[in-house]
Length: 286
Image (cartoon, rainbow, N blue to C red; front, side, top):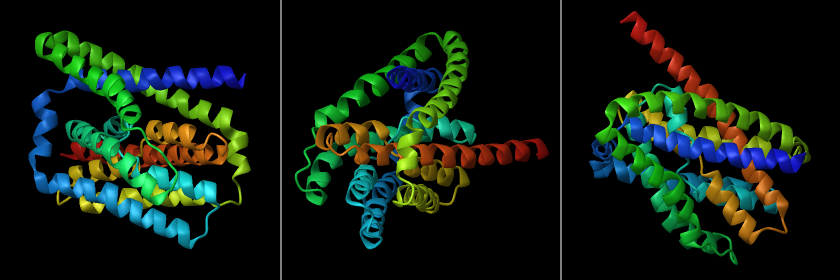
């Protein structure tokens, strides 16, 4: 039964990632995605908050609080694993700037593929990270569908608009089912971490990253919200890949990454939903 559930999670995960990227491509243009990232000062802030501030604080506090070694390793891996495919969907829930979220997500994933192989062996001696293994899912499951969507949008705009609406519905349903399956299948693993600090530290990780990104996002509220969500949602695919390759004999590392991902999804879906409701009510008032 667990094997069936894990297979469903894999299938739904692929449906969500590929479907979300296609939907983004059908809804946007290349210029819309690139335009927000032409501001090098904003780009620098995005990279500093994700690859300097978050890792330094998380590694420092994980050491100060003396988290169990395997949980600490999981947190450190995710501290550097920025750029998650869930980000645009969460920004969609918040009724935020989706083009900006896709641009930030792409930038973070590209830089993460460079940073992870360099930084993890320095902070976790003995860890090996293959940059190509990190980049492959980025290219084939995310950038390629996004590019196909953008190409289709440029040639068949009406079809793209209808397809985007359908895919948004499909991916929204898939993420809800994914959350349910995660809790159902990994519940015993989650329970096994009670008392270790994994759950509490995961919630802190997400909230700290959300606040750090939000206040680093500049004066515009929309930019702050997008950067907050982008910083708080880490890349589970990259994290689990590193855990599977380097810590296959230490399952708590992977479990920690799953718990952090679940915490981020729950917290950010609540936060983005609340932001979306506020924005909707503000529009009605106007």
